Image 1 (cartoon, rainbow, N blue to C red):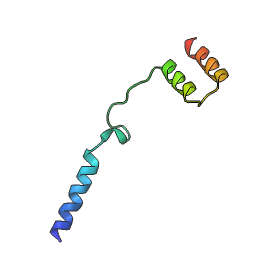
Image 2: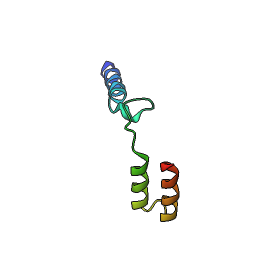
Image 3: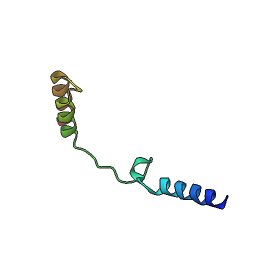
Image 4: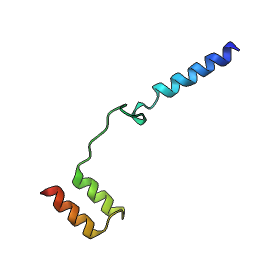
Length: 61
């Protein structure tokens, strides 16, 4: 029975201590340049050329 508790505690500690960036407020987040983000979204087809130009104008103003 004690082995089960030790395994459970080990699993909980592993989950809490590994990959802290996936948890809210954990790790550091890199801030991406808005223009680069727009370029990526346009290239990936997430936004149209018209949307890209409109948003680019807003970012640059």
